[in-house]
Amino acid sequence: MARTLSQDLRDRVVAAIDGGLSCRAAAARFGVSVSSAIRWRRRALEHGQAVAKPRGGDRHSGKIEAHGGFIRELIAAQGDMTLVEVQARLIERGAPVGIGTVHRFFVRHGITRKKRMARPVCKGDFEVF
Image: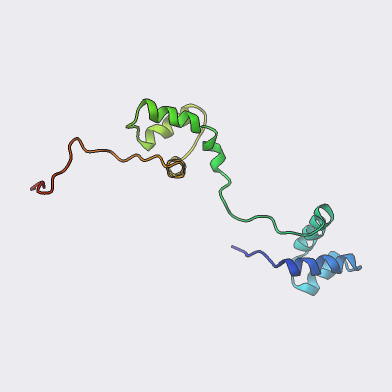
C-alpha cells in the first residue's frame, strides 16, 4: 500500500503551480504524479490547503450497526443463537453480511457467545477415553 506523501511536499507542489508552473511541470520537478499534482491543487483551491484525507479505518460497520437493535432483540429472545443463525436472520431482513462482520459486531459491543456447561467442573473431574 502506498504511503501518504508529506504535507511539506504537497505545499511546495501547490506553491509551484500557484507561482506559474503547469501541473505537469510541477509534478516533474518534485517527482510526483501529474494526477496527484492536479488533485492537490484542486483540494487547495477548495479547502485552502492540500491536506491528505484520512486513511484506513472501518468504513463498512455502518451496515450492521443499522441493525444493532434487531440483533440485540434476537439475542435477548433466544440467547443461544449461533453466528450463522444471526447472519441468516440478517439476510432475511435484507442485510447481506458475512460471519466475520457479525463476529466483529459482537466483539465491538462486548456480546459474548460462550456456551455454558450444564454443571460446574470439579477439580478432580476428567473424562477417560
